[in-house]
Image (tube, rainbow, N blue to C red; front, side, top):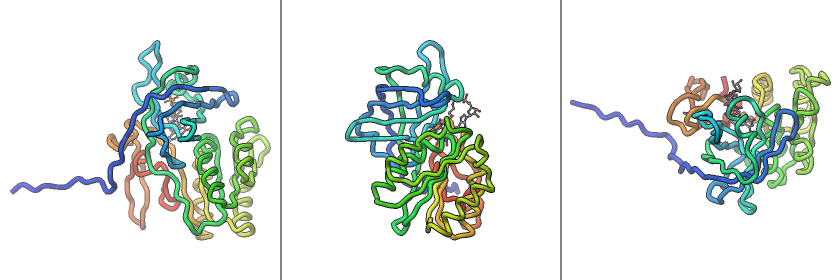
Length: 276
Ligand SMILES: Cc1cc2nc3c(=O)[nH]c(=O)nc-3n(C[C@H](O)[C@H](O)[C@H](O)COP(=O)(O)OP(=O)(O)OC[C@H]3O[C@@H](n4cnc5c(N)ncnc54)[C@H](O)[C@@H]3O)c2cc1C
Ligand code: FES
């Protein structure tokens, strides 16, 4: 007798939308990063901090990359009809993005993935961001301000030139601590001291991070030691971006059991203690 095995998604499949947006501006922020602002329809602007869009980076003159490129939401405003990204020109796809001018069309799919959670009991969250993590944590910083929470951000970069989002975070009322490789202040030892000081002396009771594996490892250990809630937004190479192809699978540990999860669909935000 044949047997039917049900291959059911454990979560309802969300509606996946593609929109052709129009570039409003695409300006350099420093020698590596650019700020892309799109005019976008309201239907795709019901976003959660930590979610991402999948951008079609096709060059008009060449075949261009076939796969879309994932990009965290840097800002979204349903009232103004805008969606923005802060991106590093890293290779072919982002190189094509850098050539976009005001008025050009851009196909985006999203919002995708699971964003950050903000526990009701949390009183003093800490954001620790490096590199592109400074983009990913920006909408979360705004959401924390809108909840009236006291928040602190540690922004880390190679040098002062790449410390983006600092003035934005400060304008939203966050206490900002900057550390950089140039100043010699971004070492794991120094960061451990700063973060433990905030946990024990300032009542930090929640941690969010993105952009660095060594910072993730450190925060996972500190959150475990101080029994503090923590989440990380992961970056991983992706193909489909919507949970079908399995290209983005990584190992995790949930309740002591090893599980392979898709960063695009089960994340990109995960509990720090689940990250292996
Ligand atoms: C959920 C998510 C959110 C992201 N948000 C941002 C963001 O806000 N700003 C930003 O600048 N970048 C972000 N990234 C990384 C961005 O997707 C890659 O830099 C981009 O896909 C590179 O494409 P490319 O064709 O220009 O480079 P490629 O030619 O494909 O690669 C150039 C270099 O970038 C690395 N790379 C390629 N894809 C990824 C990837 N998915 N993750 C990490 N490294 C990659 C390659 O290993 C290589 O070293 C995000 C990635 C993910 C998964
Ligand atoms: S990229 Fe296809 S399943 Fe995640």
